Every structure is written in C-alpha cells, then in structure tokens.
Image (cartoon, rainbow, N blue to C red; front, side, top):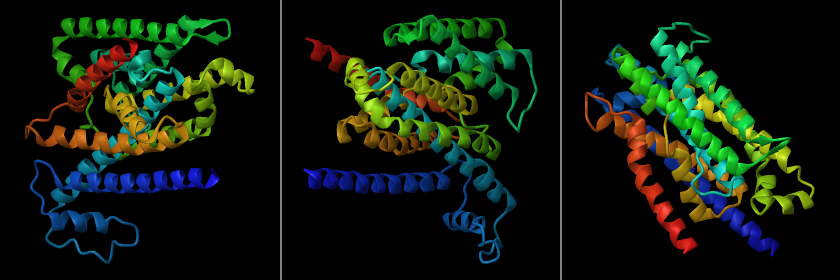
Length: 352
C-alpha cells in the first residue's frame, strides 16, 4: 500500500515537471511572437545578455535599442505578469471549488472582481493620478474596491461566528450584479472614459511593468504558500464539515483564513491586470479530471496550468488582429463560456 502511494506521488511529480517544462516553452514562444519583427537570434541574445553574469559574454552588436526595449520591457514583463496572474487565479479557483464543494466556483464568484472593476472605474472617471510604489491610481482603487467588496459580502453572509457557503455565494452574486450595474451607469454618463473602463473590465496586460510584477509577487508567494499549508485540512473539509470537526479541525477558522487569502490574491491579481474571468473555473476542473481532488496534488497542477493558460491567451490577444489588441478577458471568455455550459449540462445530468 505504501509503495503504491509513493509510486502515484512519483508519477504526479514527473507529470508536474513535464507541465512546468511546457510552461517554460510556452513562455519562451510568446517572447518571439508579436507585431514587431525581431529575429529569433536577436531575441536569444537579448535574453541571455540580461542574465546576471552574462552581460560581458553576449554581444549586443547589431541589435537596435528598440528591439531590446520591446523584449525586456514589454514582452517579458507581459509574459511574467500573465504567468503570475494565471497562477494566482487558478490557485484561488481550486481552493474555492474545494471549499464550497462546487465545481463551478471561481474567483469572481464573491464579487471581488467586480468590486475591483468598480474601484478602478471610479478612479478613471475622477481622473485620479496618484501613484504608490509605481502603481497607478486605478490599480490602487481596484485593490481597495476588491477588499471592500469582500468585507461587505462577508458581513452579509455571516451569522454570528459562522459563514454559510450558500449565503456567501448568493451575497457575492448580488453584490457583483450591483457593482456591474454601477459600472455600466458610469459608462453611460462618461462616454469619454469608456475605452479605459472597458480595458479594465475586460482585462489586459498592456500596462504591464516590472513594478507590477514586484508588487504582485509577494502577495502570490505568501497567499499560495498559505493555501498549500491548508491543503490537507481543506481535503477533510470537502468531505463534510461535521466530519472535519470530529477530526479536530476548526472549520470556521479555516474557512475565514482561506476566504481572506483567496480575496487577497484575487484583489492583487485584478488590480494589476483588470478583470479576467474563467481561469479559476477551467484550469482546476480540467486537472481535477486528471489527478483527482486531492488539493496537495491539484493545487500545484492548477498553479502551473493556470500560468500556461493565461500566457497562451495573452499571446493570442496580441497576435490575432495586429496591430490592434484584443482584451485577454475576451479570449478567456471564448474558452470559458462553452466550458461553463458543458459543466452545467453535466451537473444537470448527474442530478437527473
């Protein structure tokens, strides 16, 4: 029995390494694709030149400064930011689906994404130009809006010291609709700012930069580490709260911690990229079909898979209709909407 468990863990570990290698290949391929025509050899030289210790070994002769700027400050930052956001949203989706025992749960379910969109919309309309550690006013307002929304949803769904998952989801849905309605009203009255608002509400990495990466990275490292530490307890809770309590797990405390961490990760991701849906829905469910529901295995797979998926979607957003760029949220919706419908049909059949 012990040998079988070890064998399966070893197989999952090998597959995870293969998936990680595919992520690296996808990220590398994305650097070569774009509207600017940069030779593959020049891209390799630029990347190698910027590796610490390689500056004096790789010649940059014949490479224009514009090519260096495009690769290092535009494409590379987009790829890294897309990887981080994809990993964060997929990790949150995997956790929420297990916590709520609902395969259709995803980061936007609690109204966090719409709250971030409303915060960014207000900042755009009033013309705020404050910066904090390199983050613009829209990003700051998005983070504040996201965290404010989850506080409202949490207080609506709380009964004493307990949280009802059903009421939490309903409250999140209601608040999300309200936020979306307010955003649409603002767009009607401020048509001159509509393009900027749409860019936020549909998600984009056009404003990516090293400052956003450096700000988002600590949130993800801390948040995902906590999710991984609670993976075993989450597995037990997913079998039933009464069972978990009988085994000594403080269910309500764990739920509050996980909700807070998921909210923090989602707020950080949305504030740097705008609203990007379906990543947290598609990726965890796909890998659950492959590796099962054990969060200790599913969560790492979701993180790597989410990073790769969003890099692919962002690359498609850049190259489908050059020189114009499609919002990455529209690309994920094209993949996600049919998948969501398929989940609903499957759920209906299982009930029947």
